[in-house]
Amino acid sequence: MQKVKAIYPGSFDPTTNGHLDLIARAARIFDHVVVAVLNNSQKSALFSVTERVEMLTEAVQAFENVSVATFDGLMVDFARQQQAQAVVRGIRAISDYEYEFQMALMNRRLAPELETVFMMPAEKYSYVSSRLIKEVFRLGGSIEGLVPPSIVLRLRERAKRNLGVSDGEI
Ligand code: PNS
Image 1 (cartoon, rainbow, N blue to C red):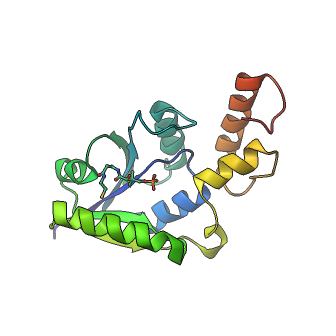
Image 2: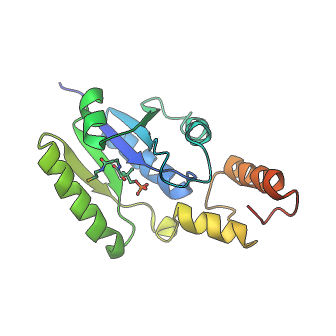
């Protein structure tokens, strides 16, 4: 039987428990999942691509059928290079849908053989995004339980390194 490989592309700046929840769900239905970090120097990111790959690699250690890679250029080109049949994207709320729908249809035009599969994370993560994690942390709010503990530590280290002050600042 043919094995089905999926790409899970994103920025992952940083990885959240919502991403990990989705990876766990995808790992249950696909033979292999490649978590693909966009290597885009134009997009202002808090963590470097190397750091993001490190964080993800640590976080997906428990999954035998999940690997982490980086890509640049078109996602569909990377998917072809990987010989993947599917691309996984998370939908948290209806507000995600419009952008995701546009992207899925553009990707379908570019690579009709690649199927986009939308998956929902657990409800408890439905409001979690990397952007909000960074904002709440920067303003001193608690992000415990929303990202892996190792990422809380990295954010704290980053805050200390950048400002030489409190935990709550990036
Ligand atoms: O985590 P994000 O930022 O929502 O992920 C967006 C991502 C990386 C999946 C998307 O921007 C992407 O695929 N970029 C690669 C360039 C590309 O293929 N653009 C055409 C999309 S239709």
